[in-house]
Image (cartoon, rainbow over all chains, first blue to last red; front, side, top):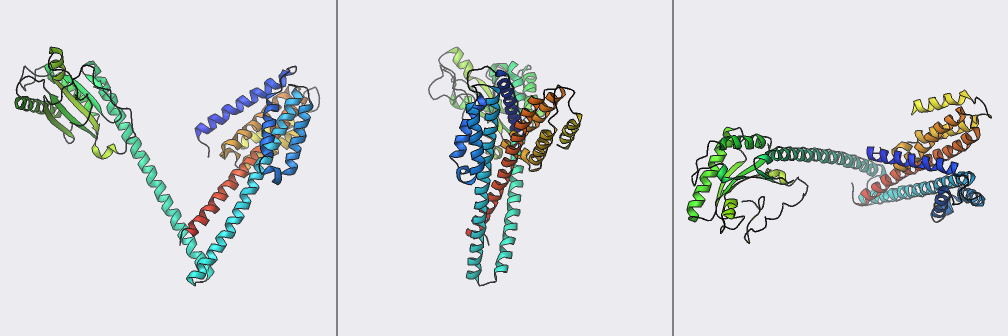
Length: 336
Length: 116
């Protein structure tokens, strides 16, 4: 059965064809040949070059003769377009009937081949021909059943993929709503919500400021819609101070954020908290602005690992911001 | 499909209100050709469906022309519609033959590949 798209395309072609016919019929005094004559010439020529030339000689002869009558008419006249239309249809019919004949001949040849192969198998196995035929029929049935099961499984997989794609789209949509309070970058394979450390923590401690809970509650509301996704809370520091201290501080901060998100209803099953310290700067630590950019919280949301293989390939994440030191990773880059 | 055919068949009986004789024989033949194409499953392949829809559209257009007394135009329209219906039928038969050929080829491939 044709698809909805095929039917829509077919209807469009029908309307266009009827419009052309109407215009040609009204043309009357046009000095150019009708579109029907143009099409008829092509179609008759094509049919003559194919199997119709030998298999549908009579019908093709009628098509040629009708075309000749069309050619003899006044250019662009209604009679020319009418005869050309009929000539083209005659040629189309001849070509289709010729192909049908060829296909029927192919089926007959296949039947003979099948019978020969069957006889050869019977001779090799030493069993009666009828037994061989029955065994083959059972085998064909088994093959059909296997194909049906395969088709069913493929349909199940397609539905699963569609569901996961919808879930990912839902998660992305939820995260997009956070743009007023955070930097958000969404993609088909992962999304990243970036928050400023100054908006969440006091000085160089792991204690959350009172206003942080409201912000994290909004983030949690979006993350709750990301069911079936992995959530990685990554906290980064700038380059000031000792490496080990920055690493410990960022880890405590990540855990503090995870605790609040858990309290706000985000399932912890696929949620991890990772302190990166100063290891992954996105800007130079030589400037105040650069250090502020490096002090950040990145919440990365991606489909759970066992689901990723079913997702189609999507666009790549944006390049690192300009001015970032060499080797810095961009938000949403490789797993941290 | 049945409603369409019945509606057109009723149109055959209406006749013309003036300006010549309604091309009833042409209408009957064209309707029969359309019916054959529909019965052969012309709506199940895009190319055949295209010509079937042209034919059906032509039948309706001819009805309108007959109602307005434009008998000659209606005859021309019916001639085109019949031609399209016959193409639709031919293409529907080709599609069926194609499916049969694919099935027979698959059987041969299976037996050759040791389908037993």
